[in-house]
Length: 330
Image (cartoon, rainbow, N blue to C red; front, side, top):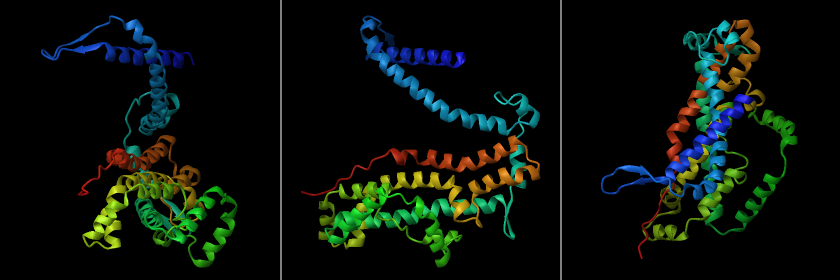
């Protein structure tokens, strides 16, 4: 506890120093030389204290997210004894073969079939990529129609969607499972992916896309109509590019949630495991019988996490971007 308090104090001093130095920094526009003018620094110091406290809390929060990942990686390349005696330090010997061992032994059985790591990887990719794509297509279609056209059905569906957001559906899981079993949707991963979502006109993502479509001026659609575009062309070539950053952000967030989702496979798709569900079962049911150590289990967790991290790093600019749309003629 003392070391943590000391770390926070040192971090606060460092953040405060950086804020003050940034304020008193002076750059000569002719020579390009940088100097520091500390005259009157006592006047700006109180205003920087609050920002230093906020910056310190943000850095501590970021560290609390990153440190478990670093800890997982460092322990995933250790041996059993090294992990037991030195679980918070650097490995004495880097055992990258732990990852190869996991790839060889990471296998679970569901019924009469065995699933290896690449089978579960395929299920994860299909589920995490296909499900949000199909869902966003239907949600965007509903949001476009309900926001761009004035009709009675749109108001009814919008009100019903808001009502469904306020009603808890947890108690209906048992009846939903019975219905899914009767119509053949239970334990059918691929059919559930291509089926449209039952709440395409409800939910937080629908509200976000609905607001994005509604905020776009009708002048863009009218200009396209004048040029001879039909409704489908307006929908997919005029309005869709304007809301594409919003859709991409929702897609990535949905992908991250589905990639790490093992509850749905545990309840709804037990015969077609993905990596998250496979790792869950493997860790609690198979790890002991297969003789895997804790570092090797951590290596499996680290491998499952890599694709979602890479996707976020590759799409973070899209998630933060905004399209500047123009081109209307007066």
